[in-house]
Image (cartoon, each protein chain N blue to C red):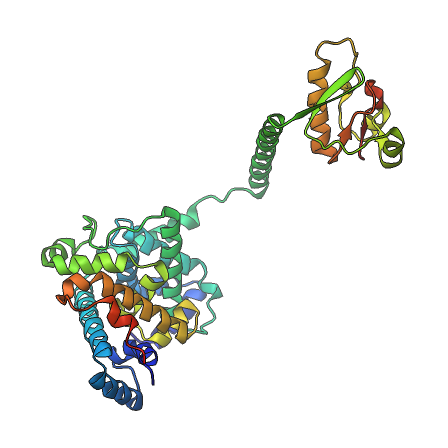
Length: 192
Length: 203
C-alpha cells in the first residue's frame, strides 16, 4: 500500500474533503477489520468497532502530523480502541466464534478444523499485550520495528513480549505438536 | 554464548530476521544443543500453525457496504444537534449536586453506625470523636465555644442545636447536629459539662 497516496488523501481530508476519507477507508478497511476481528476474538461487535476506529480517525485527522505513516497511526487507534473495548467488557471472546454478520464466515467456518480452533483459543487466552504483538506479527505480518512504532515502545520490549507470548503459545499448543518428550525441562535446563 | 542468550534470538531466528552472523551463530548452537534445537522446532511448528491461519484470515473482509456505513456515521454525527453549553453545564451541576447529596447521606449513615457515647454531667451525646479534651481551660485556649452566635456566623444553620434540655428528643437532636458539625467543620467536638451552651467545637 503506497503511503504517499495515503498522505495525499490525508491532506485532502484535513482540508475538509470527505471523499478523500472515503478513499482512506477503502484502502485500509480490510486490514483494520481483520485486526479488530482478531483482537476482539471474532466478536460480533467487530463491524461496529471497526467503524468506530475510522470514526475516531476522522475526528482527529486534523491532529495527524504525518510523523508516522497513516497506516501506523490508524493501527494505533485500532489497537487502543480494541484494548479499551476489551477492558470495558472485561471479556475475551473465543477467536473462532462464527459471526453471522461477517460476509465470509460460512467459508471460513467450513475450513476450520480442530487445530485452528486450538490456535485461536491459545492466542485468545494470551494476556492482551502478548496477544497484540502476536496478532500484529503473525496475522498482519508487521516487523518488530513496526510493532514498536504502533505500540510506542522499544523494539526490545516487542521482542520480549513476542518471546514470552511464543513460549506461552508453545505450552498451550503442545498437545497439537505431538511430542510427548517436549517438556518444561527443555526450557529451563539448557543453560550452561 | 549461553542458551539463555540464544533463546532471545530464537524468535527472530524462526522469523528469519537475524543478520547473517547471528543467524549462523544460532544455527551452530542448535547443532550441538538438543534442548535449544527442540525449542526451535516446537516454536517453529506452533508459529506455522499461526501463519497458516493468518493466510486464511486474509479472507476476512468487512461487510460490503462498510465504507458507506462509516461515512453515514460521520454524516449523522455532523447533523446531530449539539447540547447547548449552558444546558450541558446545568446537567453536569445537577449530577454533581445529586452525587454530593447522596454521598453525604451515605457518609452520615455510615458514621451513625460507628458512634460512641460519651456522657458528662446531665447531658449526653453520641459522637465518633476521640475524647481528647480533659479540662475547660484547655478547651478555651484551643477551641471557641459553640454559641448561637458562633454557629450563625459560621452559617452552618443549626438553629435546633441549642434546644431545651427538657426535650425528650434532645439526645437524638444533639447526636444529629454533632455529626453535621463534624462533617462541616472538622475533627473534634466535645462536651465539657452537661449544659449544651458549653459545647465546643474546633473552628
